[in-house]
Length: 182
Image 1 (cartoon, one colour):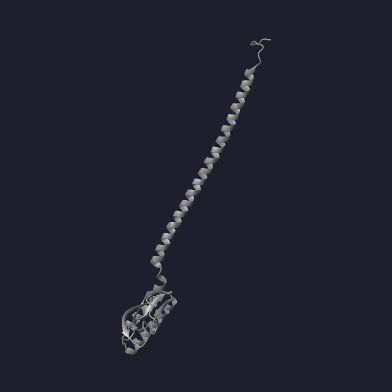
Image 2 (cartoon, rainbow, N blue to C red):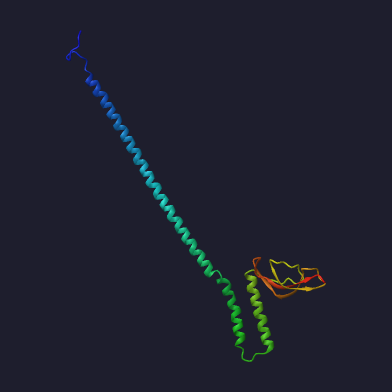
C-alpha cells in the first residue's frame, strides 16, 4: 500500500511531544540554575557582610589598641608619681622650718631618704653598688682604671651608684676598676 497524506502515520504529534519534553526540561534546568544562582548570590552577600563586619571589628581593635598604648605612655608613671609626692612634701616641709638646725636637717634628710627608698622598693627599683665585685659592662660604666692589689677588672671605687628596674638597667654605676700593677 502506498502512503498518502491521509493514511501516513501522524509524526507531528510525536515531534510536538518531543519538543514539549525538551522545552519542559529546559525550563526545569533554567529554574534549577536560577535557584542555584539565587542561593550563590545570597551566600556571597552573606560572606561579604561577614567580611565587612570582621574588617570593622579589626579596625576597632586596632584603634582601641593604639589608644591604650597612648594612655599607657601618657599615664604609665602615674603610680610612681603619686608615691613620689610624699617625698616632695617632705622636702617642702624641710624648707619651711623656721629655726633650722643641722640635726633637724639631718633627721629630715634621713626621713626623706627612707621615704624615697620605700618608693624604690615598692616599684622594684634596686640600687647597684658594685664595690668589690667583678666589673660588668652591662651594669657598670668604668671611668677610671687604677693600680690595685685586687684582681684586675674588680670595682675598687664607686663614684655614683647605679639603678635597675626589674633587672633592667636604668643607670649604670660609675666605677673605677683595678688594673694590674706595672
